[in-house]
Image (cartoon, rainbow, N blue to C red; front, side):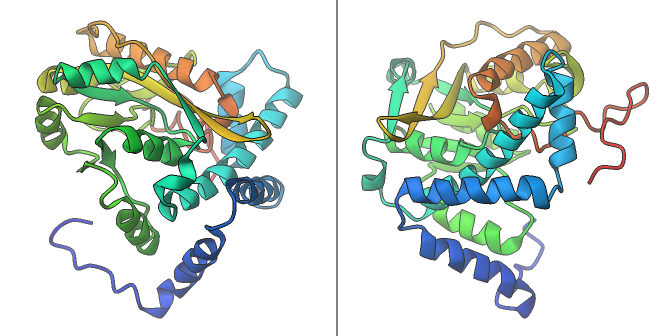
Length: 309
């Protein structure tokens, strides 16, 4: 919402169903994480079969990105992705309405010394990430260790946007609008750690067509500009949800900093996409395949999502 737009009046009847949904998950939030994720997994599985709004999109993305799989294997992966998506929703609920004590023993940090070294050197860090189902809990875990900043885009539903914004207040060091590169650069120069996920096909000034899983896709070519102007390192990181000792656990892995990014925009976007692919392959069912990654590519490219919502 821009500064000159009036704030929505969230008490109006049109928003009551959204508030009921918020109230429902707020009541469930104190449940153990295992119970919450069981509910989320169950809802995701039902949605896969009964509410296939993005099922065709998910299956199309998997067919493009994993042609080596059989149709049965991709169908199984699509169902698991829906289950993971439902679990991710309830991970967000857990994060929004839980104190720090509920995260004790729930995660393992691998390679974290690389971030500490960057902080000791007073270097800003672009934390290269992905739009995965675990991104809310990953961000909460990271924010428990370091002051974490992020590019930020709220949901379209104003009630959900309000609740999300309130729950992130005081937990994120700084929030930047998705197009606020100047603000992000200033923060990086001051040593900020910035969550940055350049893996969605949103067209803007610094986009090119580059391969993603070998398929031409609208790709972000602004990473090097942000890092260069912010005098920052680009450090990939990912979070995998896994079972450990009979309960859900989160393995947060910080990878070595990327070397100097190519000057050519297509070469840069290709390298970034390859890095994202490596993060995705660590747990492919936990990636947001429900997003239309291969849309709006322009003339000469087929519409992979024709007829899909």
